[in-house]
Amino acid sequence: MKIGVIADDFTGASDIALTLAEGGMRTAQFVGIPEVSVGVDAGIVALKSRTIPVSEAISQSLAACDWLLAQGAEQIIFKVCSTFDSTDAGNIGQVAQALAEHMGTTHVMVCPAFPANGRSVYMGHLFVGDVLLNESGMQDHPLTPMKDADLRRVLGRQTTWPVGHIDRATVAKGAADILSALPTGNAMMIVDAITEDDLHTIGAAAKGQKLLTGGSGIALGLPANFGATPATPAWVGITGPGVVLSGSCSRATREQVAKYKATTPSREITAEAVMVGDINADELADWVMAQNTPPLVYSSADPAIVAKAQTDFGAGVIAEMIESLFADLAEKLAQRGVKRMVVAGGETSGAVVTGLRAQTLLIGPKLANGVPALRHGDMALALKSGNFGGPDFFTTALCDMERTT
Image (cartoon, rainbow, N blue to C red; front, side, top):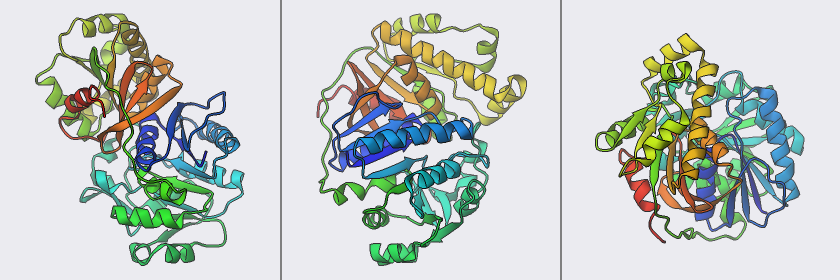
């Protein structure tokens, strides 16, 4: 293994897996830490650590790091969301610092930029499209509301290490100038990037660095450091019953839900129905299998509705109940013969993969920027970060899963 990735959620894991696979590396995504050795160029350990207690996130991440290093990984990436999802209590800064100290490294380059999906870092601030992160809708995220676009401040509240900044002007000069800007002592260094060329330059500067932290874009220039050349992952089309499961409440996903359910059978999972027991996985699975076209089951809702449910029932309680329902539903749908499953939202994706008892996911071709087709046995999966994909993503993903490349 050349590159080892620790991802703090399942959609982020498949996102960076696609980047490395398209870079020409033999890539596999693992659900949790495997029990056996594997022979790949890049291995991605998908954790569900983004919103768990800090101590647990650190413990799981260090265990994943040790396994990846034992496989021969020469470089570790701590993969976080391209919208830097975290609270002031954690977990990005704490985990990154713990990994750095565990590996005996000092400075850590940090860059969540992903220009293909409108994420850029300029003057240390994270932009989504042409607006600051805190004006993008992420300020209303039910679990990790992002109310500050200055990543230096965000990270500074999460780590005892100094937080520095390498600006775009330095990046534009080349890899050597980036390296010259890195400190000799402990520091987290936010690195600006507004284009894919910037990310390739950062990748060149990262050659030989033990640890990186960022979104999938930070991996764009890394395969070349190991002699890999770009390639399209092979895929044999999978046909059969399909379904869309959506738990994300992002603006992009709510638009996708509205577009899809306008022409397709759909069932909404409300917080009230879950809490009083008016909805269950068996009944939902029966309903899905009775439809003639891939239907939609969703809990995605407007932020005001989510906020009221959190007030009424407790944010942690309702999130756990809905995730448990999606996990049970995924298991029952697989048992009933569903072969194509599109999932929206990181927490929902984690629940679905848990329900499917998946251990290794094979990486297929791109369904949208940051979203590959994944193979789990004879099932095709798409695990979509809430903000990714166009308005017709659900329809196009289901169709593309059937095509052989």
